[in-house]
Length: 129
Image 1 (cartoon, helix red, strand yellow):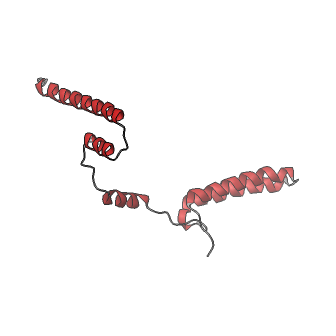
Image 2 (tube, one colour; image 1 turned 90 degrees about the horizontal axis):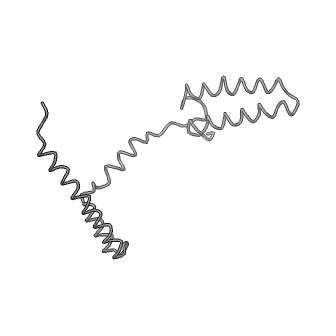
Image 3 (cartoon, one colour; image 1 turned 180 degrees about the vertical axis):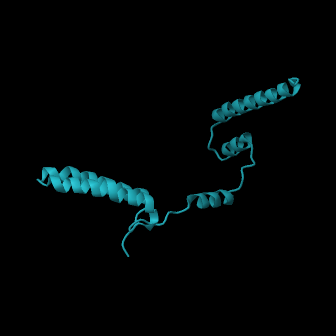
């Protein structure tokens, strides 16, 4: 069984080879072969690769990455920890120094206070009708 490539890679190989051979043939003294190579590569093979996709010889079946990604996401537990809890865990494991922990904790507490203030302000505003 011949080796296969994903559609985009195969199209890239065809484009590079076509361009290279089209540029090389006139230098080698074969201008008609250069024109034939350009027409065959860019106007026949590349469109066929795009249209036929995996039905084109040497192009492999596409892997549905959305299924693999969704399965990987579903296997990961949803993060239920707050940012402060995650920071405390990192501090406990020794990944964060005392000064860095305090600095980040202050910043997190400030942003939580700001978020709570914004929510409270919105609750107090009368609705415009």
